Image (cartoon, rainbow, N blue to C red; front, side, top):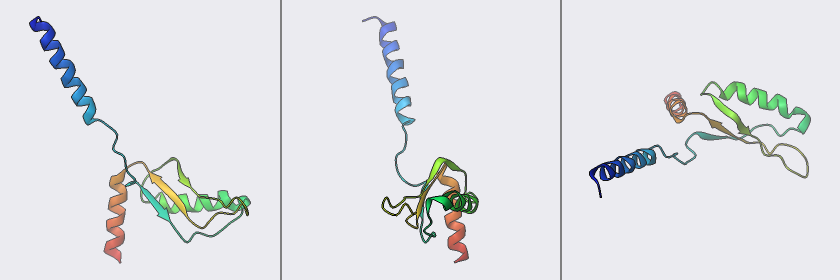
Length: 103
């Protein structure tokens, strides 16, 4: 095997290892659950979503399609809670600390 081939193989392996370190971190650290929301019919869903977004966007940037309010299929009303996914974990942690400090 030529030295050029060996060096090229080592460079390729190094590139592969660097790509591995960029792997997506899984988890739910940037998602919160908001409970005790009003149970509303579909007609009022947009209004409630707007209020929730206004309040919780103060914590950080909510992802596109990052707010999910489950709906009861039988009644077509919300279930009184939602999930909010933020773009970053850092701002969420900062807000949690602020809330703990004021408690």
